[in-house]
Image (cartoon, rainbow over all chains, first blue to last red; front, side):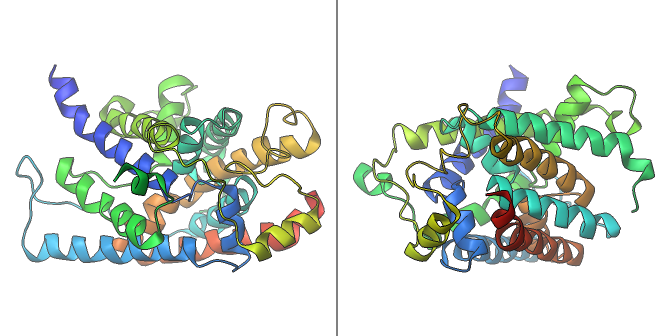
Amino acid sequence: MSTLRNHLPYLLAGILFGILLTKAEVISWWRIQEMYRLQSFHMYGVIGSAVVTGAISVWLMKRFNVSTRSGEPIAIQPKSFDKGIVIGGLLFGIGWGITGACPGPLYAQIGAGMTVVVVTLLSAIAGTWTYGRLREKLPH
Amino acid sequence: MLELLRQPWPWYVAGPLIGLTVPLLLWIGNKSFGISSTLRDLCAACVPAGIPFFQYDWKDRTWNLVYVAGIMLGALLSVTVLGNPEPVAIAPDTVADLQALGLTDFSGLGPSEIFSWDVLLSWRGLIFTVVGGFLVGFGTRYAGGCTSGHSIFGLSTLQWPSLVATICFMAGGFITTHLLLPLIF
């Protein structure tokens, strides 16, 4: 039961996020095409306002020393830089343009009934596995 | 109220709520928002194959697998209880550009002429689902994150590597849209 109690908040947060992605239509291949053709502000508005809201809320949490639900101090994992950010970032971007979905929307598209995206997700898992397999040989 | 919720949500409502995911996950359990790492967790859980990159206790990260299960459920609720019968209102210029590439069916979340079981085994279907998916999984892990981990969490926490990553994501998408799509179609 403690597992359920520990995991329920993440399930609810995930449901909320899935609703947001779907109702904002950011899981639509059409919306991604509009974005990359600079023909609609929608995606830029969603991502831009998400970043601004996220940044303000993280700043407020630090400013007022907000701790986690269980009283721990907030710890933010640092992102380190290496060549993979550029090479991997470009490869992911090319894939994002093709599939019209980054990882979150892949899960959401399946839930929204695009069952063929199960194949895209399995292929994404295979891509991650291949990266893990080749990691030592790739430039970083 | 339900009628209002069934409409597509404008960016200025959905965007800020998506941004609140960052403090929400920090508050729930000090978690860094990031979806693509679940692909690594699934590798570690199912096919670790002795690869060092997958030798870690993925069970410590079940919260994120529960989270993505929630994403699927949320999407299901969105197309049923909160379902909008109208098609996506695509910008007319985008429709014209895609018609020029040969697409004719503009219903659904994406083109059925590309994403469906019927065309999966055609060369076009394989490129859009299998090759595209592979690049998403390979690229995100190589870059150490995706749109959620870098572009939303990383930028929200003012980390410059995430800004570089986001610029590269966008550059890749522009390359696909303007250089590769005309070749693939």
